[in-house]
Amino acid sequence: MKPMKALSMALAAPAVLSAQKNFRANPVIGSGSMNARGLHRWRVRQTHAMSDRRRDLLAGALDPAEREAFDRDGYVARENALPADLFAAFKAELATHRFRAWEMQQGDTATRLMPLPVAGDSAAAKVRAHLRSPSFRNLTGYVAGRSGGYNPVLQTVAVHPDPSRPDPQVTLHADTFHPTAKFWLFLDDVGIEDGPFAYVPGSHKLTPERLAWEHEQALKATADGNAHHASGSFRMTEEGLPALGYDRPVTPLPVKANTFMLADTFGFHRRSPAMKPNARVAVHGMLRRNPFMPWNGLDPSEIPGVDGRLIWLLFASRDAKARMGRPDKYRSVGEKLAADLAVG
Ligand SMILES: O=C(O)CCC(=O)C(=O)O
Ligand SMILES: [Fe+2]
Image (tube, rainbow, N blue to C red; front, side, top):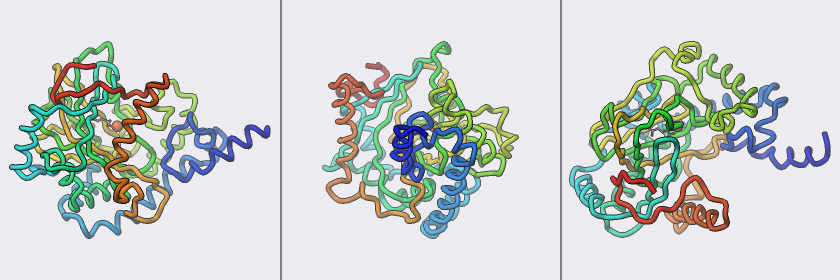
């Protein structure tokens, strides 16, 4: 090995024991010879075994019916998630209050993120606190396979359907190689025509066939033409599911307003294509921590004073990058109403 190559491999090595999933960005994770010897397969198996142990420690704090639903399906829906009066107050606030917004365009779909206020007594701040209260936190930690802090943000998915410019999120995929949680508190009914979240029930389980498939994907990921695949979010086809031991079909999950939908996005999922222009508004969040650490909780992002500022720092850093001529995929679009369908 040439000295420069050896140095870059040495610098890249610690990421093996982290949530880093990008085959192209990291020369060790993307190494053909290491993956041929089973590096990716080891990372998958190890993180799933560790998540199982961490989940066992959290299980006692859960509602048994929610736990059972999640263990079976890989997702769980909690209806009437916010108290009715808070939900009504939040909807009323969203109808008139503009929030600072950042937008990303992918195909025919724009995704807008609007951080919620972290203090004060607005309904939005109360919703944020409610979604971080123990019963949400415990369930989210369990689904993620490791509990910790998270920052719910308002998310609008604004679609102007155009089959010639598909949204990459409508392709079936897994987000990463280890258990990880995403959630949506949907603010309106989401019918089939509105592009609901869809999931392959049971596909969060690491079957021997899935493990073998993960290994095969890793061997070709670095060279894959699909950038999402190469970055470690493996794409999947509906026809390929039975061979991995998943005998249930992709299931669109239409919901009633005020439903909290939570999924382990190691399982295969996608956004169903919307059939008409629409804006799907939700409070959205994710919990993804280093999956190689044995403990739950003790999350440095939750240190008082740090907690709540990180999300704003993240968005500020996007603006700073844009000012330096290196625009992030999310760009600042000023203040917006959540349900605004106009993009830009
Ligand atoms: O918005 C959705 O329904 C799913 C999108 C997705 O795949 C993701 O956020 O990981
Ligand atoms: Fe996804």
